Length: 399
Image (cartoon, rainbow, N blue to C red):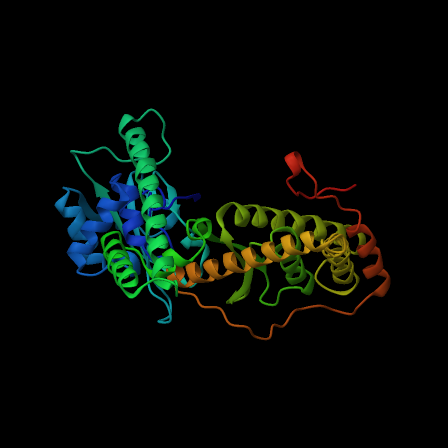
């Protein structure tokens, strides 16, 4: 099923920070209502903020208020989903996570991540949404005056929110300044709290970097054959998220007899890292099979490991650049600081949106006998790769 990243208009309406708002997002996409209107009404119906999730009963009540008919689909397979607007209710196989609501319009899934890629979720319910008084909203379809007007209004709303955030942050600085008088601190705190309550802002929204808290996040999976992934497959994922796309993080999940490598972080970087990972998996595995007949054991696995170890690294360039002066070292420190902030935001999104909190642990990989000659040959071939593509985009290719 085709997947399109869509936040339901959350960022366009000026909302910042991470939130588990899958119900609000999906309803906004299906109905075409503005995210802020859905958010506010969900809060009234549910009696709590929609940032942390909304009950399915509240979602049904919202749709009923706007004359949307909701009927259960009696089909069995996701590949047979009907045309039109659908709301999908996913339930976890275990009790360690919460459920998830997503939406499909004309067999295209709109969400911030692809729930069908997660084997720990099952499709428990499909709701068909129809409204005779309103057309089915299709995100990204041109020529719709209402959509164009909504986008323009969203841009204006975002500008207003940016001004509000600047005002709140200025008040926060005043309240935190030791040089401020007691009256100034009290007035700043009172005004700041009023603005935060009025516009659904939290403390993290005003102290984090504005660019990062507005950054769209996602996660995508690359399934691998076998329960025990090869060492070179793990090394390749680490290489991509360290040297090529440092803003992206990854983790491994084993379900049944299959391993999955999940990439999560900023939307564009995750999509590019996933495509490059799949492309390099195919390239390295094909090269190993052509030379040694396999890529999972023996000489073939040793060749693949050497291939990954021989890929160009950025560390040498950074060390050489850092020797040119304190300015470059300061720039590198700023870059590292920003990457850490992006990683923290991505981990927070992963917990808020997907209910996943990662922990470190030992991992076992499969590999046969080590062949030093094959490893050296793979390392030499890997060193010949050039990642410079169009407009500087790093892609795979031989020199």
